[in-house]
Amino acid sequence: MLSFSSAIEPLRIANQLAAQPLYSWHTLSEDGTSVTCSNGTELTVNGPLSNAPQADYSLIVAGPAAQNAAQSPAVSWLRRKARFGGTVGAISGGTGLLAEAGLLASGGFTLHWEDRLGFCEHFPGLEPLDQLFCADGQILTCSGGTAALDLSLHLIATHHGQRFARTVSDMCVHAGLRSGGERPQSSLSYVLGSRSPHLVKAAGIMAENLEDPLPLQEIAHRAAISRRHMERLFSTHTGRTPAHYYRDLRLERGRKLLSETDYRLPVISAACGFSSPTVFARNFKRKFGIAPVEYQSRRPRRA
Picture (tube, rainbow, N blue to C red):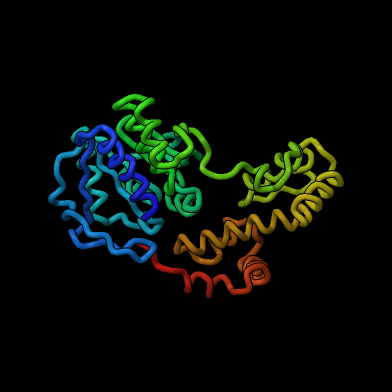
């Protein structure tokens, strides 16, 4: 719901400021029935995809479940739109539908950071960018949330100039015009609560090597510090040993894979760098207080 309204409201405000209809929009669902948003709100639509009017832009808004929607009518609809030269795009989990339609190439798209792990497991040949939005030719993608507002402001600036787009941004009480290349998450130094370049480097190396964990001595070497100094930094700024911090990263990846995919425990444990499903399950239950199989069975089914 946040992504959806963030994409449309700047267009409405642009119309209001210009005192003329610069933009119009139609909301559609696959079968024309209302859609239940993630917050429970029922969203009434203008009709089904089959009756979609001609449009300059066709954007899909969806949750992470869309990554497993290969047979969705929206996939064939997107292919047809792209085939006839239309600009198509996705907001948040809608990127999965673009991938199913075969419209994405590595290095030219983004999606919500929380959906990244499940997406990369489902589409191993595609690598999303870690940024707010991407405008790659006739493909638009957005990382979701208020980044949808940034994408709409980008389009307004393209059509009517940056000065007008800044005025729209001010009306949204938004922090100016953010470039698409900005990262959607807080920087690692902010998350760690430290500007220590060695600590940030070591934590970044860990985050990039979850499936095949590196020895701590190797991580310290790559971060250009001694292992003892690395241990002091982690203890001071995270309250955990490097090994504990590294294990928590891998378990958090496991939790996301359990939430966002239907992979079985052996696949997930291997993807998180654990020697066996038993070791993964034991550590998972110790951290989260629930067995991974039970956690996966309880996950909400999102659409």
